[in-house]
Image 1 (tube, rainbow, N blue to C red):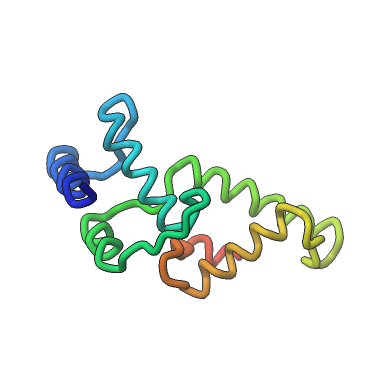
Image 2: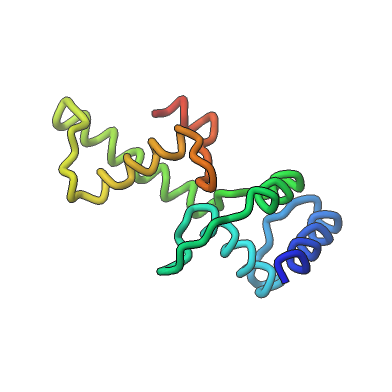
Length: 128
């Protein structure tokens, strides 16, 4: 089933020149794309799932966008929160129970290039 949806996405890319599927165009493929992003981030719910490297490579080859525009907006909001925290406190020693602390840890994992974790973009690396 994964390969069927992958080939459907390849066809979509061939027809549209990109892989940014919109829900109103093809809700089934849209949901599948979202699930691939969640799998890569390890946020598939309570199941522990290992995203096969071969599947990640196939998606990368067709220009799969691991981050959506919504995620980009959310990332910048957290980044701005971090900047504000530093301006206010003069340091980045965030309370370990604060959501910002968890976000910072996720950025470290992404920067370290851990497998099966969506990497930071060059822009995000420069900003941090």
